[in-house]
Image (cartoon, rainbow, N blue to C red; front, top):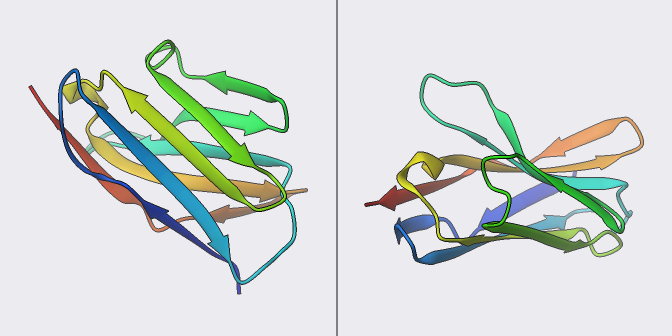
Length: 114
């Protein structure tokens, strides 16, 4: 069984910083794509950032503030959140994809206060 465990969520002040981490257990297989998604109450789950080997992309709303990094072989992926805003408050989910199979983490709450 593949399990993705997110950590690092919690409370943050606007203008501060927060780092989310995701680690896979139960498998040593590498992945093709890793990313972070988030879902706020009443909203659809949306892409925050994604990395596929050396190529990364971000949602427009987080460009210049968040940075994604990871190791595809070790199946670890981090999201450095600098200058978070209250609008960034959501449950953040880690995604790892190998070929056409998606694996999701359980989600970690991020709350940003102004």
